[in-house]
Image (tube, rainbow, N blue to C red; front, side):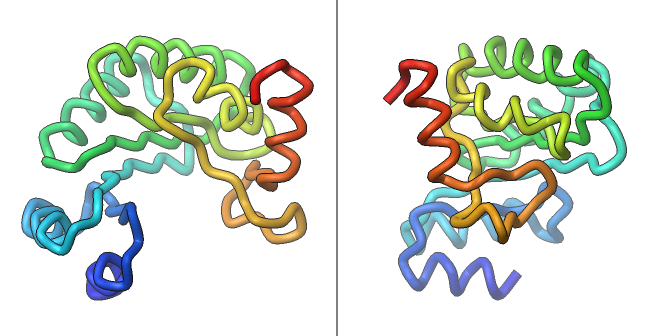
Length: 151
């Protein structure tokens, strides 16, 4: 938790706090007082939850007081990607949201989630040093967006 506070004090615009963080509301409030915005994250490293479970997770994230909820799941099949993008589109109508799938299969959701209404997505600085499974570099993501006609 101290690292998150230090990040805010050092001037980071956003600080990402896991939903299971002890004293979550207190941590979020402290980060806000310092002047940073907060992302509250839920990660499921095993699967993509059902639509009803995704809705529940989103409600919990939004109730935390954070600025942006982030839901990241393990994409195991194409249908997971389609559900995550549809969920992102629906959830973004009620406020900011970040949502995508992890792993090689989920890479496409990292690219397309902003097209479907996500506030932003995550990319690595270098293709050789991804921080998470399925993450691609900023350069590669920009190339894909340019090829799609988004700039």
